[in-house]
Image 1 (cartoon, rainbow, N blue to C red):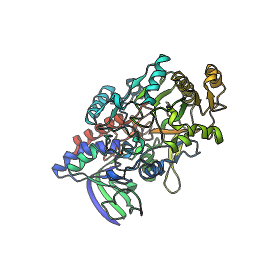
Image 2: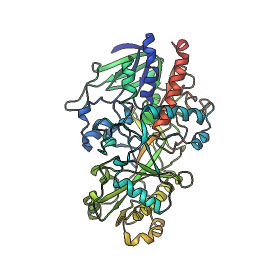
Image 3: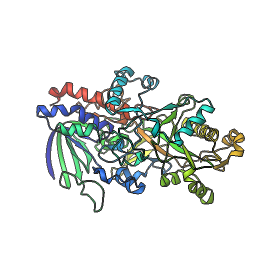
Image 4: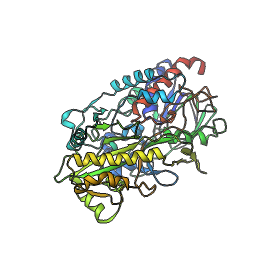
Length: 501
C-alpha cells in the first residue's frame, strides 16, 4: 500500500467538490497541499461524441442505471471529472426563500445563500437562452401554457458558445456548458490543486482515507489516473466529502460513523420524474437547440410538481415510456414529431427513505414513493397532457393512464382519464434526478449529521459539501444551491486553517 499526505483532501469533483477546490486553491500559494479525489475518469474534449450508450457508460454511475433497493426507480448522477455538472442541462436556479425558511437550520439564512448563489451564477455565465437556440419543442410548451394561462418562465442556463446540439445530458460535445469541469476545477488546478481521477475512496478514518486507484480499462474513454493503480493510504489534516447524496452517506457508513451519527443516511429524497410525450401532425424541431429552456413551478407548493421542457434521445425516450408492442413502437417511429415535457414530483424526506450499504459496502437507496409525491406525479401528468393538447398534439402518451395513448378526440375527457389513472411502482417508469439529503444540516447528532457549515458533528476536521447536506427537498435544480453551501464550507475552512492544521 502506498502512503501519501496532504493538508486538505476533497472527495468528489462536482458542484460541491469543484467549488471547495476553487475557493481553497489560493491556500496552495501558502504552501498547503490540496488534492481532489474523483472516482470517475477525465475525458478529453474529442471523446464527447454524444452517442447515448457510449456516453452513459463513461459519465454516469452504473451507466445511468443505478436502481433503488426495490428496483422501482432509477437515480441518475454523474461519475466523472466534474461530477453531475457534466451531465445536467445547465439550469441554474436560485434557492427558493420558502424552502430555506422551512429547512429552519440554525445559522443558515436565505439571504446568505442567495448572495453566494448569485456569485456563482455570474461566474458560470448563467443567463437566459438566446432566441436562436429556442426550438419548437420549447416554443410549443410556451404556447400551450399561455393558452391555459399558466405562469411559464425561462430557465437561466450556464452556457457559453452553445451550438444547440441538445446533448447536455450526455456531456456537451462543444464544451459550452460551464460546469465545474470547465470553470472551477481548471482554476483550482492552475493554483496548484491536484486532481486525481479513477480514485475511489473506500473509507475515512481519523484524518486518513483508504483509497483505490483503478487502471483504465482497455478501450475505455478518459485518461489514465495520474497515480499508479493500487491501494493508497492518504493522510489529511482536513477532509471534505463531496461525493454526492448517494455516495457521501455510504462512505461515512462504510467508515463506521453510523454509531455516533444516528441520522446518517436518513432524510434522503430526490425528484421522481417521468416524461409525457405528445405527437404532432408534422415534424417539429425538437432535438436541435437547447433542450431545457422553460418551466412551470406554480404548482410546486399546492400540488407538489414542477414541469420542465426536455428532449431525450431515442434510448432514454423508449425506456421512459410505458407499455410494449405496437403503441410503443408507433410513438418511437414518430420521434421527429414528438414534443416532451418532464414531470418532476417534489417528494419530501420520509423516515423510510434513506441510504444504507450492503455487505460489500456499496450504497443502497431505500425509496418509498410518498402519497404527496405520487399525487404530484399524477397531477403533473394530467397538467402536462393538457399543455400538449393545447399546443396542438394529435395524441399524447401518458404513462399512468390505463391506456397510455390518448387521442386528441379524447382531450375533452382528459380529467376523467386522469381520475382513472393509476401509479404502479415498478410498472410506471420513473427516473429520479437531483438526489438530496442523507447528511442533513442541523443542531446536533440527534437531529442531523452536520452543522450549517457542513462540519460533521464531533469531528472538527471533517466536512460535507454536496446535496447530501439538504435537510429536505429543495424543489428545484440544486446545482447553484450546492455551490452556495460549498462556498460556506470553504469559508469556514479558510477561517480555521491555522487551528485545524
